[in-house]
Length: 355
Image (cartoon, rainbow, N blue to C red; front, top):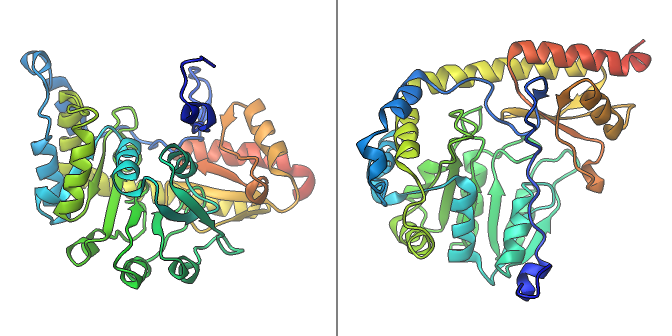
């Protein structure tokens, strides 16, 4: 700790990301990267974005990328904001609209939300999820505070329907509802079509999971123009060039390659089904997932023992010490070969219980 720290920095509790090991021998199922490589068109765009393009500053408005997103989502480019990963987009959003205000989120959800609340002095209320980890929509309606909601939720993988989201947005037109769709593309309904009718709704997304671009750091938000202007004001007061030319080129190619997205998402869903069924056969409870991960616990063995046993066998998954979910593991959907290896190792770990 430096004597030059302000009080806020002394008190803030930073987010701890999932482990990023350097070893190539590990089966990495802990941070929900896509199991497949990006599309060939993305790789080609990265190769072509060089030379003269690197000498110049990137387009600060990322007009080409915003136009591609707008065309795909059937909105105007004025309703699209892009940033250096969805975490940056969300951080700008917390500063622009939620700083010092009352905010609701869930008690079991993305761990960055309380961090931003603390950093920006928001008055955060964590609404408990139900016993089955589903979202209590009626409980969220009772308080007039803004709502920040991951959909599908992380780490549970469960999702609300578009009608559920509409009922939240419609229940109080004077509060902002933020729907974090970091895991869109794997089965859940998107709230983007609601943007046309509601000026109190923002949908954020990431290309890390759906488009296999976690290493590129690209995210975006869709909302009505007044909200997008607010985000742009924060961005241009912080960093006018958040996306470099390579990131803009790669992300534009990814957004435009709908065929790859549909095929890759189908593959993830198929592997997810195999993993879920295989774990259930070994005595695991598995929540229904609409993301590229599953949330599971064994009916007899504690989570920390399984977590450690997997790591001893070079398989990384994610676990938290939070009381309500300490026995649960979040396991990313990998390739079919990785799923089969995971299930084989799990069979060894739980064999005393499975006979």
